[in-house]
Amino acid sequence: MKLIIITGASKGIGNAIAKEFYKNGYAVISLSRTKATNLNGIEQIECDLTDLVSLQAVFKSVLNKAKFSSLTSITLFNNAGSLGLIKHLENNDYQIIINSVNINYTAPLLLNSMFIKETESWGIDRKIRTISSGAANSDIDGWSVYCSTKAAVNRMTSVIGLEQENKKSPVHTIAIYPGIVDTGMQTEIRNASEENFSNVLRFKEMKANNELVSPEEVAIKILVIENDSSIENGSIVDVRDY
Ligand SMILES: NC(=O)c1ccc[n+]([C@@H]2O[C@H](COP(=O)([O-])OP(=O)(O)OC[C@H]3O[C@@H](n4cnc5c(N)ncnc54)[C@H](OP(=O)(O)O)[C@@H]3O)[C@@H](O)[C@H]2O)c1
Image (cartoon, rainbow, N blue to C red; front, top):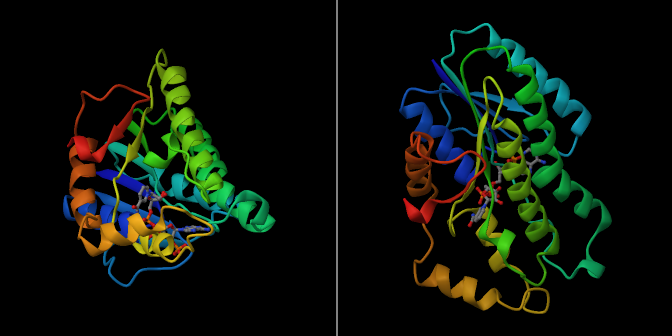
């Protein structure tokens, strides 16, 4: 049995990944604040990634439970993400800055650390996939927290790849750019004011011109990426190349 543990499968890209992998024979466990009604057969655990103490306890119990099933591979998908407030940094809300950093960056760091350590002796394929964003490589006004946390998960990925190089049972990790995907996150972007985000009109145009891809199309490509054994450990992969 192949298992994926995915954060943020209640909506958007994570929801489509959970459905696509489940359809293709994977067992799936989702960690989100809310439960989706369209994930029949998928275990959904309510969990808030901003609560880093509870998160450790929840993840440890998920791994303990998984340990005793007959797994051939286990993949952690760090998918949950938050834009926070789209505002210039000096106008942002301190608690929302902290929450967004925790969701986008600190939670993946902690989960990756626990995952690599706790599964070390399992003797099965171990993978980590982190959903990043092209925003990691761009300066976008109003998005300082989002751009910087996505840049951070890219670096986290490449350093873990380096650290795992000479391990006996290396974890394979990549970060994935999903493209511009028609989810609630894009609605939030389009709802920003031009004063806070100068390029908002371009995002409205892209939606009007049907330039966004569906979460389902992205999930199909992510399954292809999952099965591509030629991808170097620590790489950043763009779904649009598949
Ligand atoms: N959409 C795009 O165009 C795009 C482009 C590049 C990268 N991405 C990245 O793709 C990933 C998925 O984004 P999306 O577009 O699917 O966003 P979305 O539709 O807004 O979904 C976000 C998911 O994250 C979960 N989440 C948010 N805060 C959470 C918290 N505190 N604790 C636990 N779960 C939390 C949400 O679940 P609950 O609300 O139930 O907690 C939801 O399932 C993100 O990492 C995002 O940065 C998206």
